[in-house]
Length: 187
Image (cartoon, rainbow, N blue to C red; front, side, top):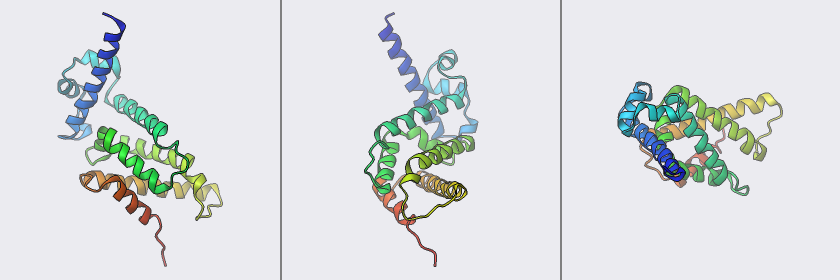
């Protein structure tokens, strides 16, 4: 067999594994899904699964890393976007490419994976958002730490509510809502 056919089969198997996980998450929680379930849904052997991944957690982690890499390459490199535009681009990307991620963020997902996603959001905010914030004076590293913890948890909660609600609002509508929420004053 030629190398091209092997590469094609390799990527097709990975795609089938992801599709299988998506289909399963639409029916049951992540914690109840087994490798056997994934293999049956993807119509592959267990040995084919284990050629790609150690377990379902590694599969999801590899998917997340690939997705984050794609986001960084396509969305976050646009330096002159405002926060609302960045959120619109991210939500549009998730709508188009992130079906599995959406299911993992939903109430059917895994708390472990949700925490990993929150960490990725936090890291992204520290690297890309914190240096651009101008209207809040965060003097100490402690203030910055808790501000980012607050903001990343809030953003994740909004994303999760949107996903659990069926993503009825468009990415642009959600970005506008998030931008409006972020501008509140307490008097």
